Image (cartoon, rainbow, N blue to C red; front, side, top):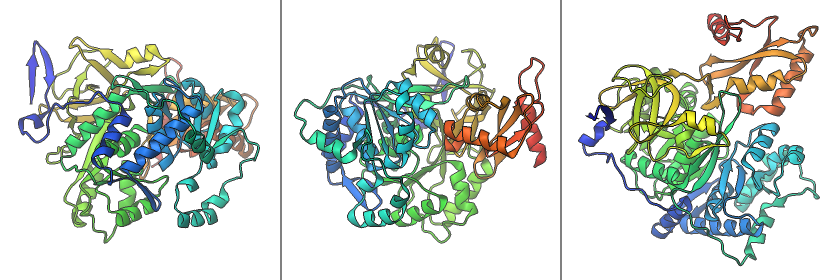
Length: 573
């Protein structure tokens, strides 16, 4: 229900009246790593993670983290330093993430499929003193080494985390395709890294509290500039407590299929940290296809899965789970993009047919609050709703461009406040002030840039984005960023990026290009532009097509009318 206090609408989620989910929780003042170590004390023999045939208990994970922390200290990395982690979901990523936290550093998590120039930007913007990636991506870092000032580049390998049998298979398949790193390359191998730490004898742990910075996650910007979102220990730990409460089925020892990537708030916050601070097992998956994902569900029988709508659509379309017993699933979470009403109905029906007792629970959030801040309750849903706020999280709908709260049912900008709200955009005080606003009620509210409504029971309904943004396969793509890159090509006069509807990816990226006077469209020019894009644009954001135009449509004030291009694409269908 909702109440009014001094003329201000105070949102109290409906579930507080039912006594099933506590609307207010107690949060620790500890660091992220301290919370994980607390689980090691309670559940030392429980499995913390499994990975391609190998695994580690909580006790072993605690030792691995400590060993990594010593290795970081041996390299001269100290409290407050930023370390870039450019890894898929693998044991080294988990160990290093918490080791950085243990020494009081800040982990800057970036996508391994980022382009060379994106990586250079992230390293310089974060002022990272060291970076870690896997051998497969060494070439990207080697190409930009002269543009960045990192002192140490640590190179790990998926092979390092495999058992002897799996190593043989890996060497005969994927390992053979990875280019050899030159013997004189200025790197620290994973084995050298750990060995260096084994002889370190100084102090290791730097005590940190909930209020201290811990993680940087990068988000695109409508201005075309990526921003580092600084998040605290408390932000991540609060999310872990909130999700355990909202799940209503959670117990230590249960398993999460962790396929969502660790550079993303959804993967890092939900599938990894929230599990490890509650005694669960993370089934780490470095990369997957819908077919391998379905196979993992069959073989590993996880209790929880999280994915984007396009993944669930692919599972249905490709008949990948026909005949599977899904009674193991206690929580199925969808995020990263809106789950259509029709897809939810189809997937819920499919789950019921396969012995699953629960339905898909849609969530909503932004990286500015780690990830999810709103979730469909386990026993109450409303068609088209993205759920209710997590405990201690408040939502309100305001008139766009203002802090003026709107009545129930009226569409406006979605704002949220709570214990997971970011600290700041690093080096962007003006954008921080625009997005994180202090309201008259005394709370700091994130203005999401999304339009929606709220009903009288506190259920939220997402309508559309205020920001110009494309969501493809769960990734946010900001057209202005891609246009800036395209426009730097020597043959391009002007460009426009739009999202085209796609049954699997929800949207795919298309580029329209107006060439400079005197340059005629050709396959050679297109190939040159594509090669330019590959060097500067992450793989997931690459345009699937480049269409040349003699002119681009304009608005009355002279801006490129991207909506006209969107409408033209719609008419082609």
